[in-house]
Image (cartoon, rainbow, N blue to C red; front, side, top):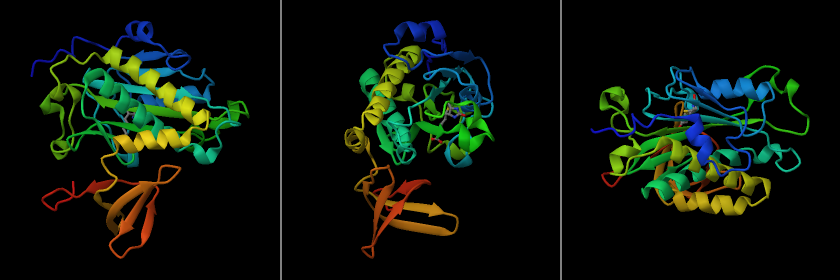
Length: 288
Ligand code: BTN
């Protein structure tokens, strides 16, 4: 495929000049040509008390990390690999509400992609960005306190630290896609004739993420949850969740105030999924 995005490289000056945020993307930003993982680097920076909003970007990740311990395929100049350090004040965000940041980032990226490229983007619980059932992006939210021993020592007592990692597939060479992901992974440029400008899209994502984070900090949780539901491709569907040897099937009914998935099983009982991955039943009866 003709690839207009490879010539459109991630460029800090181009991103920063298009930012319309108050603080997101306006910290001690870094752009790496190659890095193991932008989230790992942002976790280190969070420990070193960089300003809230600091952004770590990479043109390529050699050990990109996904949810559930998976790796994130991150070839050179094929996607947006970005991590933001956030420091929400504890008096505005109780620790029980921290899971909302994952939802916020998912909604924000869906909005930014939809508004920039007019694509029918959806959110598969909890935060897979999907088009036509295939994954084009994902969010990995982490806290240094949970991942790095002693990480909170340097932090002000009145702040939390969160790293929001965003992976958006822009344009892949099909040969770069591992065989086991061929049916599952996709990229934005495959769905539009418009050239996808990584720098513009990233600046829009930053604005949208900041607005969604503002919603959390202004206790507008219901607004955020209702926006998530508008993008959901999961609610109302028959789903299967597998965890170890246990498998649950049922109708995805709702999400709770913290973003957990409410599933109605065929025996009528409700169960709540707090984490993990689900498959959605397709019209042929298979789960994908
Ligand atoms: C998922 O599994 O859906 C989450 C994927 C998150 C990938 C991004 S790419 C930038 C950041 N750095 C990482 O190592 N992971 C996240």
